[in-house]
Image: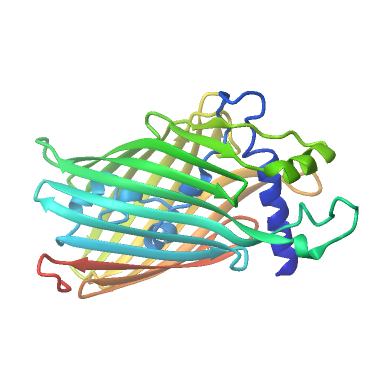
Length: 367
């Protein structure tokens, strides 16, 4: 545990000194890194995570605020609440999510989502050695590196039968102790369409690009540490998250009224250069994911999925192919749904994810 926390501390400080603070030439500099606001790519809800994040076409509950705002129109009751907690890296990194969806009328629904991904109590050892050259452990302090997202969602039916549209206004807040912080703003647009037994979904994230404006407050003592160690002192700047596109299609099969099987495949497409995914080019990269959900009497569900198909090189230099599997189970009873997922976040690191969903009618009692 101690070794893992020290490793994460190094990673956070490296991010502080380089990748996050990449804007080092002018206060007005704008950067478009390949990976930006990546905490918003993890996913929410144990149901979706158990299906390998393949849910943009079939999502129909409060988690739609994240996956596809158009799906909010399928909530069954007047009000729906969804909560999730997950921990990564032996509990050091914590990921929390909560959303609420409220039906306005038969044709429109609004939603609010809050997401936090953070590492707390990180030791700050940059001032461990005092100006006289002595080691002073009293100079060790702690800080948090946390990312927040606030999503304001709206969904509405339109005149075309089976078609629903939606969108998000999102506000991003990123904090690295007292050293740095950023505010960001962006928009998402989405739609769902039902045709017989088929479901189709599309989500355009960061449709206008999402802009994070970074400001830094290192202080004179830390600036001297940066200078003495040969690091550049970062300056204020703007980081841009380019648009990405998710296309999905799903079909549900009914078996003798009691059993059902839902299968979905999604294509996650980015336009920020070639990534290490199944289909990559200088123009776009496509990362597919597939998920299956088997249900019994709308009471219990079993789920499985795969995603993140990548090509890598092992220690011998040989090319290997990797994939991240996931599985899960869900139980629904009288408006209360409890979901569990076991997900692989890479390199055989598995995490347990739990989420809770409450369906509440207009009389504020469980449906």
